[in-house]
Image 1 (cartoon, one colour):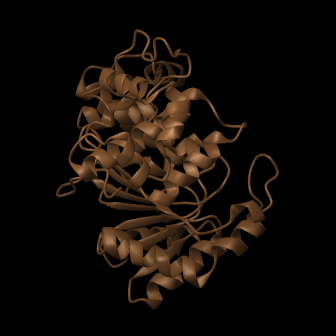
Image 2: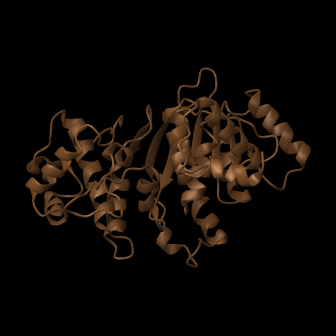
Image 3: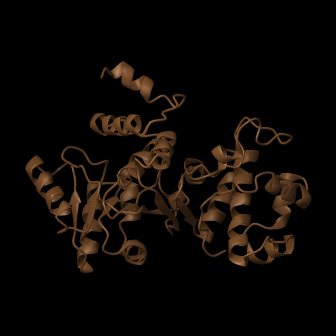
Amino acid sequence: MSRTRMKSWMSPNRNLKRNLACRALFDWSERLHWTISDRSISLGIETGVLCPYHYFGCFDNVDYSQIHHNGIAYSVRDLERALIIPERDRAIIRKWQDKAEGKPTIAFCCTINHAERVAESFAANGINALAYTSEMQRDQRLKVVSEFKAGKISVLCVVDVLNEGADLPFVECLLFLRPTESKRVFFQQLGRGLRRYSGKPHCIVVDFIGNFKNANRIIEYQGLLPFGANTSAEDPFGKRNPKSILSLPAGCQVHFDDHVIELFYDQTLDAAYATRHNIRGILFYQYQRLARRLQRPPTKQDVDRNCVIGSDIYITCFGSWEAFLEAKASAKGFLFDGFDLGNG
């Protein structure tokens, strides 16, 4: 198949209806190392070509404001110094043991030194782990992948997306241990765990989220925004089906720590990021999370008593509490479909 024809197949405007066509699409995208988009991932999960994911956004107590950023990316040297600390390693291992102990795991790290350090920390806790880096010879990399496939290694620590010889559909857990600075990187990493495999119901994704630049855009990557950028306050959904804006693919779940929600909110209110639709996305998420915990629709007083973001912000954003409830009612049955929102 020509490269031009493949590009037309991967256009987000193309409606691929047949599973066979979907499977061909993903097979080719893997072979050509093309970036998988949010739409193609959603399509793959909905059609059964890819497996669902259960995503956990965990608070990362690293102060990224003290790390040099050149406007495009963080200084690798500064980032390495900030992330390679025993306390963070211990927190990562505890979270992995809680969410995915024993499951074949890929840990995405920021540098070769970071990957080696994370692998050493896991090994020091009795967990078989190795780094997989570009400094290794090809035969050595193939040997590591072979041992990973055989179950001799539980955690494979990598710097960039795995390359040659790394067809790993059995992977059941992904650890995002570096700042996710772009949508491309987010989906590139996510795609590594979504291949179907016998006995694999879903992939667990544990993302460590600190106050790094654009952290709040992770909610956009997940499709959690209740209003599109081109909608208006009078017609928030426009002519589109709300489900296409709000829902995760079938079987997927998203959880965020309370501190992460607060971080998203703080960044979203920054003039550099704030728009009506992404602020509302956080407010809807927080409300749905509280509703799940209370097992009933929360009142304004419930929000004030239990939530990081108070009802006054809802009133500021929607005009009144009643207007918020009306907006929520218009999306009833679609908001965060399939989420397990955890504790408020």
